[in-house]
Length: 234
Image (cartoon, rainbow, N blue to C red):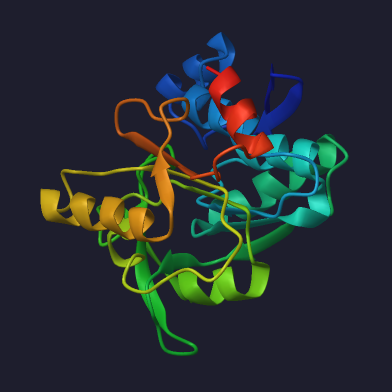
């Protein structure tokens, strides 16, 4: 069993789960540093957080520390990671997080399943990818948003984001941060995502955006206290 501590979060990983490259980033403290910075930026006490793609539960734990575990709903498709996430949350006293097994996508029929490819070292696992195939439930992002009504959505779903922006999200969204995967879809898909967010009164967030990580924040009204906070950060 490997053990690490990042940003005050205690993490453990069973041997054989991660590649040497992942273990190296964990040891250096650079593992998921952009995602961790996004959680620091976006998540506040009482905010409801929807995390799509939990990995080993590092960012899940950061979100639960800031928002309260009862406000966090995290979804992970890789069944090998579910006990790891639960153990890491428990290690940090945050067992109240809601953890769901499934691959998130656009509209799906009830009970739909799909083949999910688990890659070596777990990062890069995806629907329609290469690796050990496992059957997983498909989960509609619209159902999750309708049920959880998140203020913050964080996602790293290895290309599945392409199918999530076909109807308005009805929730009090304040921040949305996603990792794009331009090798898996056309530039028009990225434009569709940007246009979708703009239609929901969301604007580009330079603080959480970096490389393929694209962040959006709500456009506050003129004179809103939120504007002063945003302008003072970053």
